[in-house]
Length: 84
Image (cartoon, rainbow, N blue to C red; front, side, top):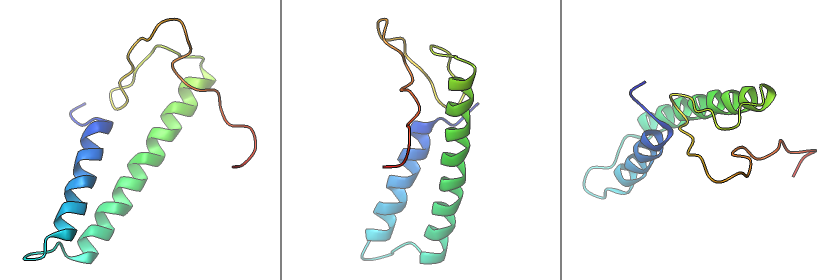
């Protein structure tokens, strides 16, 4: 896979910078569209994480969400219980 979560983050910060450009700001409809697509990608990533938890796949990475091994502690936090 070509794009990773870090790339999404970079693109979103580019949109913020383009919106702040006083000489040639990004069109608001375009920014909203980018935001909507980004949210869809984020929701998809959440499903990947939930699937990794359900499969007890600590230590495995996806193409979109790379995982680095860090000692013996779990790589994925446990799912939240209840609402914040």
